[in-house]
Length: 158
Image (cartoon, rainbow, N blue to C red; front, side, top):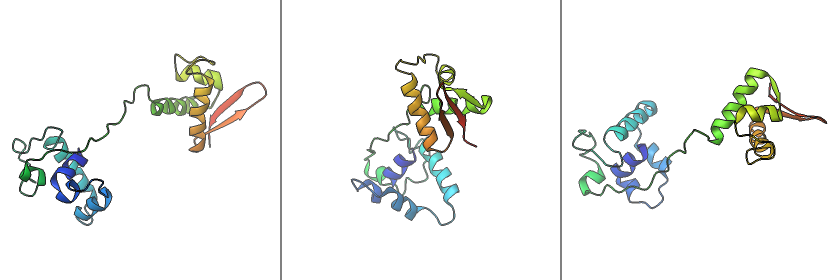
């Protein structure tokens, strides 16, 4: 919503195909007031400047200066939405960290079964999938993976 509000309100952003959004946003933000400004813009975006603007009903304080309100052109680029958390890779990473925090270390397949109820070592969400997830966590410095002769053990990095 912040992007929609800024895109519609400020002609500098609205009239550029690929604006350097950060530069424009920093130029219009009052010095030393970033937290207050960003909170106000988020509130404004949520109350008045959604996909279907409610400028008059919400008594938007920007109407006097707003490019979209003055021209009647409320178009805005599609803003990508964040994917669902349920079942996401982010959720599975969180489960791995939580489980390792609770248990110290776990064998690869034991961890897999606790992360996903549909975990099957050779299945779609099996060892290959879990190793990819763990490799990302290892790259982020969060886990250690120890490939042993019998079993692969995983633990949080200390």
